[in-house]
Image (cartoon, rainbow, N blue to C red):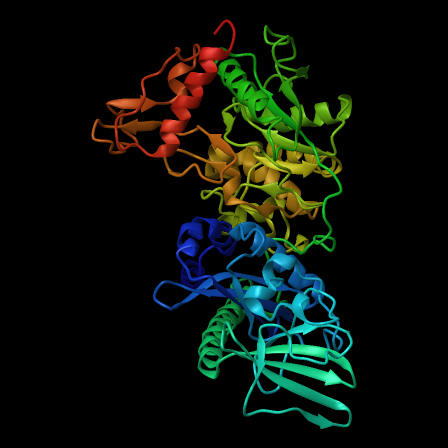
Length: 571
């Protein structure tokens, strides 16, 4: 079982890292193939996938998703994320080939699935320009199946033209045929040389088809089928092993097969947001100098990014759990709450975090519907939109959070009747954007589990400084709250090297380098930045920049700290 788990890896973590392959996708050819298939056995779901072709004309898997059914809505949801993640814009230059489209059981004849225009709406690239056909209304194309060829079909209803479309010339060897008032015209596209078939019923144009070359069709079809077969086999293997449970060292049988997606697909995902969905930024802090200087830098960058395009950042609150006001009350919006009773935290001050959120949620007036739980050592790299969707909060997956590897301990707080241990997300409470009403449900459970874990000797020894993070993940799972996992939510130098398309910089790790630009982690380097070097007071202004060949993320961190300290009054 352990060997299988190591071979298959952590599916949630691997899925969250798909964005790391964005640079590779940029080198692919501008062609995307779409397909879907049924998953049999215990999965009882359907697989949607998108594949491309790299510079060597090899198959390149771009994205896949497991959905309840292959419907208009599920395809719209899949394609909307594909457009957003690949930044396809209006789709110029992109060719999309639906190798296996929904049958009539899913889409009625000539009914148009509401897919987004950028993916399949470029007539000049994918099919004849319908605006040039006499009397034809311009309409969004739709993918349909053909019994003899793979094709693009534009669903239309218009009067039959008396002449050939502009840009088309009648094929010399093919005429017009009719059977029971249903006929077809065959033309040759002058620009592309492809054959175009118009299918008629009476004088009504029902379908326009662009016929692909057979060799291209069979080549792409074989690639996609190979990919589908591979994923099907691996899924069956995975869920077969997951379905077995053991009791008293004896297998009790195949009791349940369950699907463990990253999230369930929201039912209203295709509906556009009517307006900005602001979220309230909240972080917990102490009154120590170490916490204060970090809060001041974070608040500086919050003000810099809050009103920029793309931001949905609302108001800001520092939740001060020292019990008494401090000297930053006028500089940073602050809400004072009580610490845990003396001795309750057992020297682990982070246990005050869930208790602070419980008090703040009960006593404060929070106008925004969503809340971002943040920490003092966060810096906003870019304007942060609301990455959550409805009741699905968003979180950052930490590589060291591995609930499945600690199932015996997790089960102390998350019994089997609550579901598989994979329901516990590999996250902490920060950064998380979550609906306020969901956090109100989770917060008290999060606090109680944190205290129980700290008083359990085995759990405390195993989880150590991430104990409170596991408590939040378990509390969320107990309430049925599953998080969208986004690797681009946060950047952690020195391990994460690239700043692009990231929103938050988290400087919790020490950055130690020699003068050659080589990382000397665990050993104090010739050049270093470590927040723990400034426990008794803030870092000085104008810190020295790192030597050459240092990762961009580390250079950005030092530059942003220097800018903040140079502009914050009375630093």
